[in-house]
Image (spheres, rainbow, N blue to C red):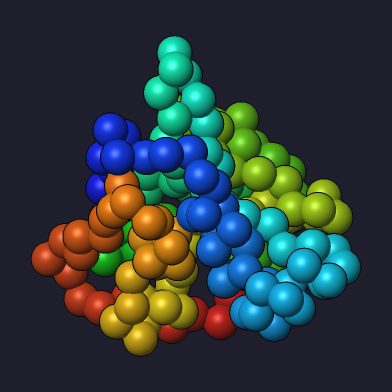
Amino acid sequence: MLQINIERCLGCHSCELACAVEHSRSKILSEAIKESPPPGYRVSVIGVDGAVGPLQCRHCDDAACVMVCPSGALVKSEEGPVFLNYSLCVGCQLCVIACPFGVIYSDREGKAVIKCDLCRERLGREEDPACVTACPTGALRFEEPEMAKIKDGKDH
């Protein structure tokens, strides 16, 4: 899963930008900034008591978001991550309320939610999540627990 070394984070927001581009339609920065609606990111750089660091889904073992989801759109995979099936999301926002980390957001249209998916397509290609690749200081690392490779999903 994602490992964060808060002492290395500069607060540069490179992880946010990389996440937004990765979740854009074009996957190209120069095109993504022109998309409407603009792509959303699933990681936020926050500051607390003078320290800064990235905050995204922790893919909890006992995920409250999954427990409250009435449509079954949020699922804890056998491999560990919590994934969202966007097409099943009814936009009730119960998961937003239930998440203890505040890392599930309403999409720009308010029809569904978005959350970190660990760049599921990239993992399927055995690549690190975009936020990890973009981090200039190595504050973010991805360590895959002993699990089967996450299969590419089309409903996220």
